[in-house]
Length: 568
Ligand code: ARG
Image (cartoon, rainbow, N blue to C red):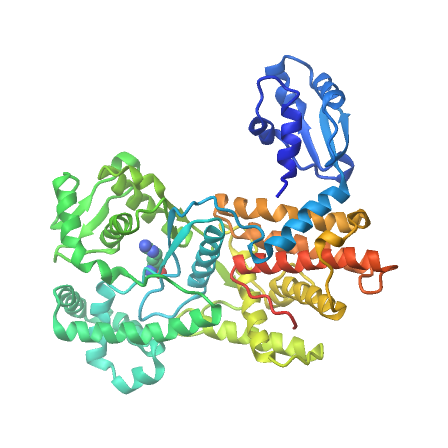
């Protein structure tokens, strides 16, 4: 697309000796209000290099910049150079681009096929999938979509928590108090109950802990019975998780969890040893990180069993070897900040320069308004219940609005689930989120349903319009009113926002963008009759705008993992 910022930057650069377009691009800003133009350059930032007062720079540029069809006028105000774009040319360029690119609008080939590994979701086997894992899942999925849209090859990894001493505990608990039939019936709920019972009992009888450790050692050494039980616990848990992934519409390229690294451990320990990084401490093996102001990382227990740390070091090395990533991202809650700092440091100390390509994408906690998350003994709210409740509530809203669409159940799922996802992604990821039904489901608020309803509104206008005009045939002068220009500007921002979301690893940039676009469109919709426009020409121009909004909302929703039903 004709990139306006670029055009303007090169016009300005042509008047400044020794400055390139790229230098000017850095300086251009979007002014906070339209009276200050569409783009603005604070000239004080040039006064040092040019040895001139900002006022003088602005005025000289204002006089010397050559005319261009895209630029309506340029003003020099208080040391700022304010550029006003020609609205019809602007609208023409943006809308033509959106309509021709369709579902590709906003995409770019920045990645050139370079690889990005994203580790997300990664729940712990034999425990319920909780609301924190939902956040990881949705942030990870959004980053997956965003990177792919920008030309990267993404590998999504679900690093299942399927290994560790807790499995020894579960085996002991199952053998003492468990019943196959109940586990088959109640699944993870029963596994979690057994695990809780183990801890209660072990307080009285510490020998249970020894037994549990012994069972985990057996598992690590390939004992048949231990492996059979372990595999069964994994299957039971995956059944529950897969139901959730299906509801959410999330997929993974690999389910290589912690257990996957079991046979790769010896080699890692050997390498660490060869590199003189290991220290013995009362029988345990660890890596000291005092020099980096971090506590030591335990790599092996007395009994030779490995730990979460060990498996993450192995996973980091494996992923580099297997995928040769340009970046390896871990979407895991902020309480694990230290863990990842340790892992990244260890890999660096092993001498791998690519350690700097590993990034921890942390996030804040989610809590439920009013109620505590602890609704069950198992101590976390079941995510599946939350999603299903949301779907039911949306169905109720649809019924109240007398929705008569044929695929009501499917749409209620898309909007109900979308509401939860959007809510999760609507604030800066590092912030804690308080979940409130009223806010998440408000079809007029800054929510998923609001954006989805706006998209459906655009679809409905287009459907009623019948045959649609093509962009080339339209008189873009008719889109010069403030509401239409407001929409066109938002459409234009989409491309930049996606890049921003990627650079900041922050999907909320997209969710906020979608609310802005939806709001701009709704202002337009309320001010400017479309189907009943004054004449055919205006109607056609407005319909082109509506098409572009529909495409862009849909593309944006997809990037954060939401569907875009045409009717609600
Ligand atoms: N299973 C862990 C948890 O629930 C998250 C794992 C994240 N990924 C990793 N490579 N450590 O806390």
